[in-house]
Image (cartoon, rainbow, N blue to C red):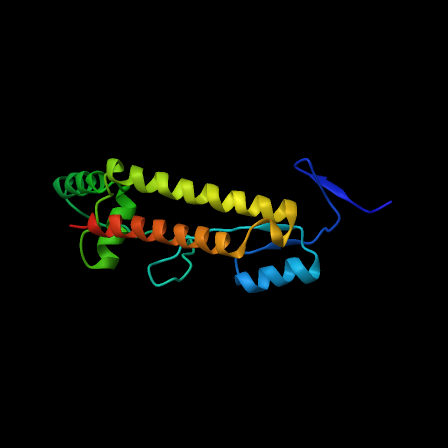
Length: 166
């Protein structure tokens, strides 16, 4: 009897699960073909416009300021208008050398969000096909197209946010 396990109603003979976040499409294909990976996960990361992964940094240090009540009210009002908390607003102003960009209008981002979801659904369908049927389950051209669509949608979000800057 073969040593198998069942996940999501599918039976697998390999316990090798490949996370694709750091690997090229060629390396993933080789792992599926030669190492017998039957499950491939897809990971999306937040990157800045230059491609560097954005890491969340702990904010542990506090700075205390003495300001007038009028200035405090004005800062709270501007933070609210920018869609930020007071701490984030002051931090961005101080570090960026000017007022932070306002949050883009949700009505402008809805169509872009819908496109991202559509692209994500395509990527999930491809991952499911790869996990179910192996490397032949999703043609490389379909995988490349889905990744390109995700990249285009992410660039559209970045452009919309950049356009929202004053």
